[in-house]
Image (tube, rainbow, N blue to C red):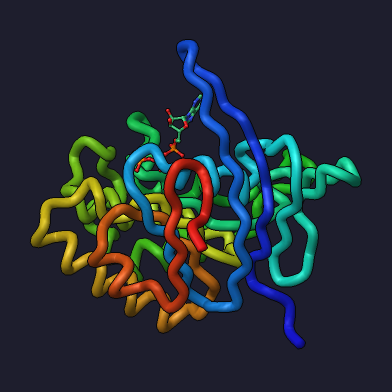
Length: 225
Ligand SMILES: Nc1ncnc2c1ncn2[C@@H]1O[C@H](COP(=O)(O)OP(=O)(O)OP(=O)(O)O)[C@@H](O)[C@H]1O
């Protein structure tokens, strides 16, 4: 029997301004494309951050294709970089003072001066500039881009390091409805081409219909049965 792509069972309590939110999510998926769907404030982003290694749960375990990434009982917490996932933030989180090419190159693993980046890394940046038709705007900064170009830049940054899986936080929420449709087509074509597992969180039923080979419903911090 093959290992699940994602096998997650974690708990975390977050507190802010006197409020307390309990995340207690547990799911296992064998699908290449999984969508976690739920309302605002349900705990979607916290779940994705825990899987990416950006948020440390208090309890539980996270495994990817049979490899443990986090295991509280064993004190294991693989750093985000070693998990090697491509992460697309809801607001894209592009660096405003870096141009498109530099933003994409930022996704590459940092290397020391003793171990400089090989030339093929620049070829990788070039490859994604071409793939997403960003060459013409490669020297422009995020505020000089359209919404679609910003999203493609962020996706290119997530992909340039050849991630083992793509984690997408509301990838289309910042786009107007027209563009949303087009970018969904683009993502679908991309996933068909690169064939890496994808985990998406969204509150948009259209995303669920389109990408939810497996779908999970989350509300009030937990996955619903
Ligand atoms: N860093 C944090 N510190 C404290 N509380 C947080 C933190 N991040 C999120 N929360 C709280 O945890 C709850 C779940 O947040 P989360 O961002 O996971 O929701 P979400 O389902 O992704 O919502 P949305 O669709 O609006 O992005 C919310 O009540 C939020 O206020």
